[in-house]
View (spheres, rainbow, N blue to C red):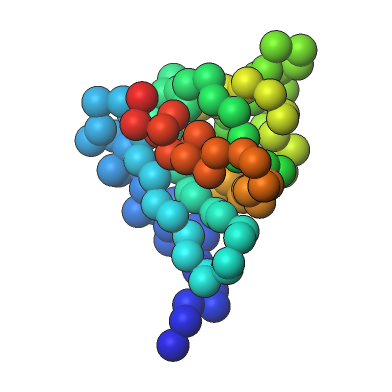
Length: 124
């Protein structure tokens, strides 16, 4: 049977301790609901941890499940807190956790864009 639902609060509870154990202060888990194109990844952060500058593989949104993060690009910086969703800038951007946080990134890769852009930034 294919997965059809994920309990996001339980996923956040799982990721925060893993992020605390990681020297980079973050941990990620792909959320697999068996979509062909839509990609979802949950990322847990310790306070001050950063997802360094990277580009989108397509259209993307960020939802804060726990905590508060700063989403920045060359033109704009916004704070996104628990319960909020924000469009991720199309160009180079970064995410910084202002407190222990968990975000859900949802992306729809577009033709001609590299799907591994975000995955590569997670290894940085």
